Image (cartoon, rainbow, N blue to C red; front, side, top):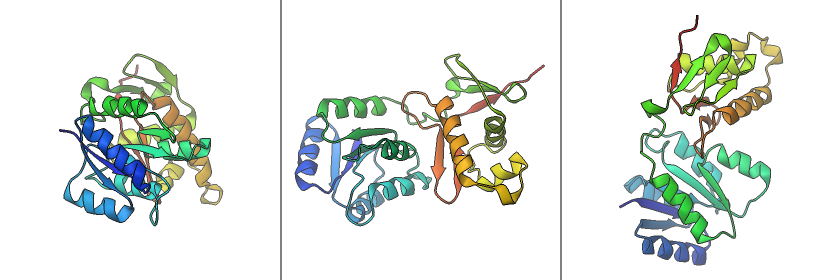
Length: 230
């Protein structure tokens, strides 16, 4: 039975949600704060987490960042269920979560989203049958579905770093050195913009192809097959 944690400080919404999830045949447990959630996850890592953003004390975004930075929980599905509906919030939220649903929501939509994720194999980021084919000299990458994407010079340099350091976190300093730019003109915001553009090219379905780790860097979540070029 799939296990879901629902983190929500509204007791009425939390109780209703847990009843609904259990009625759908899911193992569901609730938490009204980050502290309660910590108690739950220290006992068992769930398959999926429904996470409110505005929580007392440590907020949902902080929880999501901690989950993604922990090797034990980095691949757990996270769905933000929140009243924050500004586009900037969505962009920030989806940098960490797998889906973003705003309140008020329809339980049918939430259930469909949950089921879509739970049907996927746990090894969704390591599926050897869905490799991306990367041609660095041509500044080109081909998606598993055959779609081709051209890469800018900076995007190509970052992707080369990812390919040279598989499953590792690439720091902003490493990117800066790859750009061969002076330390004095280094700007983190410029890298964020380039990473965002590259992420959009690599994004398929709801999976996040590039994880961001606060004060650390970035990690590629898809496998690249480096193609021999004539």
